[in-house]
Image 1 (tube, rainbow, N blue to C red):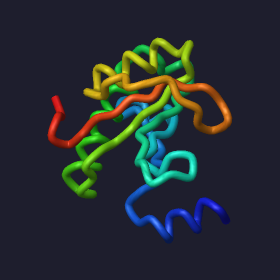
Image 2 (image 1 turned 90 degrees about the vertical axis):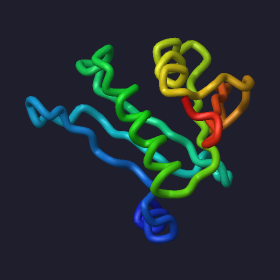
Image 3 (image 1 turned 135 degrees about the horizontal axis):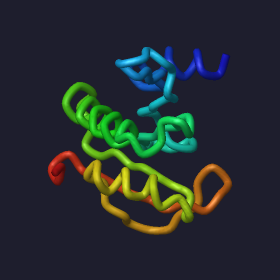
Image 4 (image 1 turned 60 degrees about the horizontal axis):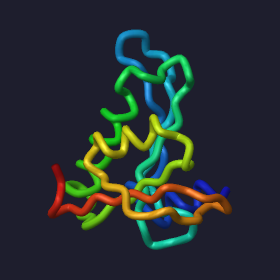
Length: 121
């Protein structure tokens, strides 16, 4: 019910399932949604390990950033990672986000990244 309520209150935001075109296999999910009870919009993903290191995370992150800026009219998008998740930090950097600070969201320490519409790569 919580997810349905979020979708009805925030049209065009949320979580999307990702599928590999070649095999039509589910690879994970991608999101553009409010971060941890804030007004900030977060880009994120979770992939099955089998699909790590194939560029899917970067490709979908770039697509969602473009969607957020060009279709949703957002001015800024954020992303976070666990401090030790170097691979996800590289995805965010390759997608145009820049590291801003260490922060605390979702009851844990995170690395906090931002991309502004007017500073897009």
